[in-house]
Image 1 (spheres, rainbow, N blue to C red):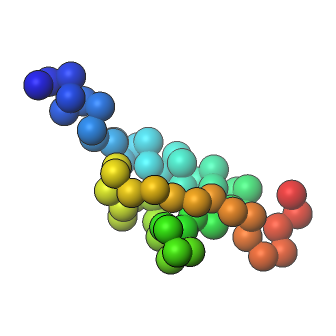
Image 2 (tube, rainbow, N blue to C red; image 1 turned 30 degrees about the vertical axis):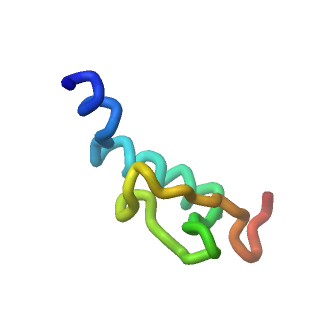
Image 3 (tube, one colour; image 1 turned 180 degrees about the horizontal axis):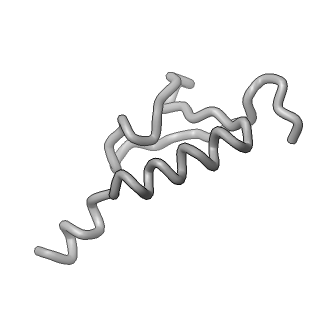
Length: 58
């Protein structure tokens, strides 16, 4: 049970670092159907799409 609980949680530090990386790379995150979302506001079961933002230099 403890193992399942550890695998199903995210720390605020982890989500913050992911958000920083996504922001620096000028990427955008979306749920299915291209609904904009934030990594820290979604469930672990949600499927996300990460795309280049408009005007991205990548």
